[in-house]
Amino acid sequence: MNPKNHWGEYFYNVTSEHRHALFWLMSIAASLILIGIGLRDPWPADEPRFALIAKEMVDTGQWFFPARAQELYPDKPPIFMWSIALFYWLTDSINFAFLIPSALSGLLTVFLVYDIGRKLWSTQIGFIAGLLLTFSLQFMLQAKTAQIDAMVCAWITLGCYGLLRFTLVDGKWRWYLLAWFFMGIGVITKGVGFLPLLMLIPYFVLRLSAKQYAQAPIITRQWLWYLGPLVMLFAISLWFLPMLWWVDQSQNSLYEVYRDNILFRQTVTRYANSWHHIKPFWYYLSSVIPGFWLPLSLALPWLIKPWWKAIKQTDARIILPLGWIVLVIVFFSMSAGKRGVYVLPALPMLALISAPYFAQLLKSKVLINLVWATVALLSLGFFVFAIAGFAEANFAVRLSDKYNVVPWLFFLIVGGAGLLSCALRLEGNKWQSWPIFITVVWVAYSTMGYDLLNEARTPKNIYREVSNIIEADAEVALVDFSEQFILFSPFRMTHFGYHTDDLQQLAAAWKWQKAQPKRYVIIDYELVSDCFDKNKVIHLGFAHRVDWVLLNSESRLDSCIPDVENLPEYRYGY
Image (tube, rainbow, N blue to C red):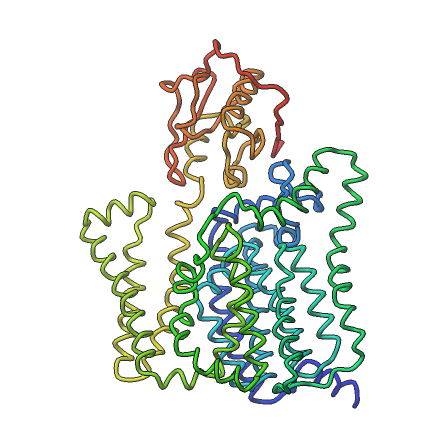
């Protein structure tokens, strides 16, 4: 085999069908994922944090230890922040850079699902699997959001891809070792990157059952099984060992706290003894999968029978991904702390094992009508809200005032388009109403929706008020701050520690303000203590449903004696 043929075989057999399928799949996915990039700012809860950390890396040149406004951030390893920082360094635009890593991760995930579906079944099945994933609600939402989950989902899918290619396609050890390497990269992106190794549980159960399963390649050199964990440890060590070395060399207690927090509290403790996002064991089955995994969640009852038939036939193409999905859901369900995005990595494998039965699913009139009815109800809801908003109905006005947006035209377009798609597909191909509807939703959300929400989801209105009141060279302190108030500030900023008690922060702000003129404090009105006169605060307006006020020297009570010692003081923009 010459080198050209070798590499063609290594990646994929280039056929006309494959080229066309890959082109159209990636074009559709890229169109939906990339639209809107650069049109909005980072939004809470997580996006401003990661964008601020990435911007600070580039601005200060300190890349290895993530920090938010000079305070070390030990909650996550730096891989995701590095990726945003890289694109910020290349483009000098945080609005463009912060969404690119998630978008590229989403596109990689779509390609991997397509390619492994093509190799396990056919190009058509791979194409369908890629489309099912692309049109899934949670997947596209995360691909368009600057959270770590889209990236860790891509690494986990790479791990699953490698294991499936090794165990079911060609038995080549490079895929097995590649899987373990990207598990390691996943671990240093977000601790759960090791999840693909759970796929080895149904694999070895199948092997030990002494049954010959479908698509079983001949695997030689059995000793290479033991090399996988070493490859994963190598990938982890690329960040882990330099971090330990720098902490040891720094002789700084803050870096030691960072090390201990990220290695223990944010991993083992967070899973075994969670302190927030507490949900019941069945949370994912009752509150996440039914809605966020649309439209695949609607098809689950109709997939049980063909999956069970495949299990009885020992079809490992279904058994391995399906067993892995169940194990992942059980794994996250066993932890008291739960968030909907935790189970996102299972969605690509669900799309993969649903695709072979797509044609069979289309024969079920009940399922097709259920998909059509879901689109119709969602569209009708949007449409009714739009009409109520234009008519200034009380409930609609209250909703608009609460979130400081007027979304009625957006709702009208989305609802109208959805109802039109249902009407056009009433006589046939009702299932097509979902891809039409969800495409309109994402296009409208990524353009008009971004424009509507951007002002409400940033503190720009607060800083406009502040700029009209204080000097351009003034210093501003934040009490109980959120990262967006640092990211969007045009002033030199001071804060007193993200996790410092609110009253202690306020006391420290009192001392800080008294030390020099032209110093101001921004704070939630509800947190103003006895050290300041509430009647003399300057109201700045509402942002993120909080009444923000400015404390100047006139509002400070000189009779106050704050009881604070040795509180940290962090400066940004000086």
